[in-house]
Length: 528
Image (cartoon, rainbow, N blue to C red; front, side, top):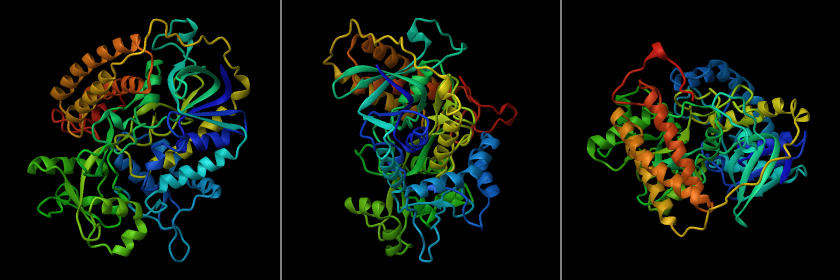
């Protein structure tokens, strides 16, 4: 059994920034199920929204976030994140992150959908990759931090594993995790005083997503199975503009920054259709734009719509978006001369593990931050480029809280080994592959951008059959990453459907044809 002071599950911006600060107070262990650099952070193109321009203001950023969140943001949390943001951004600049500057040496600030000002710091169109690399370099320089790659977290260790009966409302404590070492296929135990869940999102619950293949909702599922609380999982953000490439999975993201630079969404007739539903046109918040695209595609039976960048100088496109330009060119599309075919794709979960203002979950000694956490910042819809800022602010607040508690916590030493008695190796991997595709198809067809009670009920019935089949297989079979990921995605799908069924209104990213209007008389979170 490994013992550590701080255990971090995930190696994105939330986990790495927490690790760098936690190392001053104890031994830090980071586990990540793939290569250490593989995270949603790596694929974040747009940047970090933060108020640093004198022409901008905290009030404007706060208001933009509240408007995008459509009435469900926690205003105190929004104000905290926006106001504490500049200090957290300065920290990562001091680490060595090189955000783009203009010719006179000021930071080049982009504008994205829902923002009233240019406030998005970026590094070309690969901001997340730049941040990831700089943070990893700092982590490797710290002797108090160990990274274990290809370690898949299986379950949180709580009183349940110590032989105690734990119901939903009882106090629960996290003592560490069971992990599958995918190099030698052994299941190991890690005992930790403080555990931080920073496991990212769950885009692969859907058949079209911009997320890397690791985004299978593992952390959220582990916390839910440990009887921790989750919140607002009906709000799944579909990025309006993923590159339309039939047969390619996951989808390549076409950053919202292109629309901030002047890109215009058009239908197959060449019409700028978003203006008909919102005066902000192609720069409306993502929920509005994604629904407009979905409606336009259904109206004409089209496979995609188009993003028009042809009126932007080629030199500007090459300078601002070299990665996207190169990707488009690789499939025969010249952004400066051709329309870019785009479709909405599952991108970001605005709900997640319920945490307080210090990233504390409902399970003692377990913190959560990053995309897997529901902090109250995003409400019913995430404002573009707020997520990296949120991760930095809440990782900082988490360590400020955890450092006060770490010395009073003792590692649990009587954790039993993982019990896989009675299981055997299976050669029926086709069941896992088939059930995964079926879950993704169910979610995309019935629990996508537009929903209804009929679709949700149908999805739940079919999901129940897949759940029962998979659980039976799981109990009889030696563990594998694909099987565990399938089980987690089924859990995520169940939570999304259950949350969507409870919300008898349309708000933000949740739109249902049965309740097409907001219900402000019963404005509340879905928590269970």
